[in-house]
Length: 122
Image (cartoon, rainbow, N blue to C red; front, side):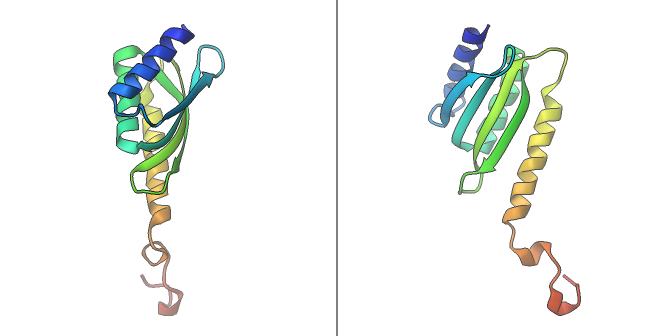
C-alpha cells in the first residue's frame, strides 16, 4: 500500500503543479505517509489534498502549515493515509482556519489592535 500511495502522491503532486515544492516523503504510522512541501502555492496544495481525497480515497490526518515569505506561499508537512470512514473536509476547514490566522498575523498591528493613543478606539 505504501508504495502505491507514494507513487500516487508524487504523480498527483506533479500534476497539481507541486512537483518542485515536493521536498520529501517518509512513512508515518500504520499506512500513513508524511509529505513535506516547501514554497508551495497554498491554493494548489488545498486543491491537491482535496483531489487526493475525492478521487483516490486518501485523507489528510494532520497538517502543519507555515508561511514561506510571499503571500499565498507556504511550507507544509501533511500526513496522509487511506481514508477510513472520515472526511477531509474537517481537516481542510482546520487548514483554512490556520491560514486565516496567518493572514491576520501579517496584518499591520493598527488593523488588529486598538490604538492606545485614541483611548481604545480603532
